[in-house]
Image 1 (spheres, rainbow, N blue to C red):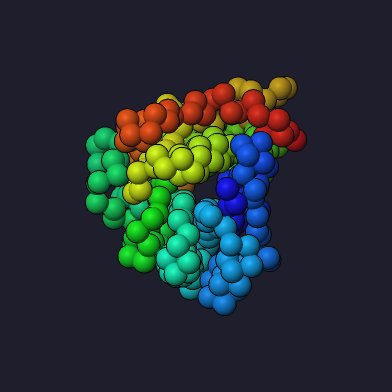
Image 2 (cartoon, rainbow, N blue to C red):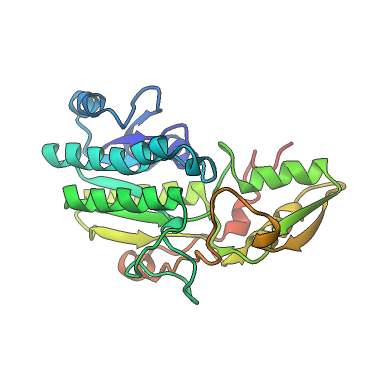
Length: 286
């Protein structure tokens, strides 16, 4: 199967590009400089040139705080381009796997969020991703939306790498302890997407929306403690703080834990243990 991957410079896109061949797929991995997914003509040219049997959209605007001011760019990539890709795929009979986020939820629910729970994002990033989901559903029947959370890996910027760096540089760090979520290794997301591609190949893939996130659910503070515990030598002292103690341009939800029972029940895909992935080469390096 030939797969076209967008966002090949991102955390998940890089992992997809690195792992696809080992799973027997011919991958065309395209960075933003190679394919601007917000340009209708560029998308059409690349789909017609490569004729993929599947498109995996791993491209996204993920600068949550910057999105509060850079609204137009955020919406262009996360909302408009998602619909454009779905339209282009529909016109050519190409199925689409689309990555979304836990940030589509407002955090007020007292349990992990299920796929059928109504989204109500509290910041511009989440709003743009929820709008992108709706565009995909509107334009393309053969789609699979995979909502993921708190993504980390050795490529690109993420919470794990930031905490590892700051813990080496500072005497103490205040880490938010009243926001709960589900850290998820980028490599595990890539493996799951490729497994879903295999299911598609053999005709065993139910379309729709699925949640896929790491286990166990945790807070940013406890996640940071697990990261720092793996660093050698002297590291910063971690202090739990509240969301109110650490104001950010974009509001954050208090609970974006994802219930992943559907993907386990329907497809037999279990949640990955995020602590195991902290040992991945290159992740905690200075």
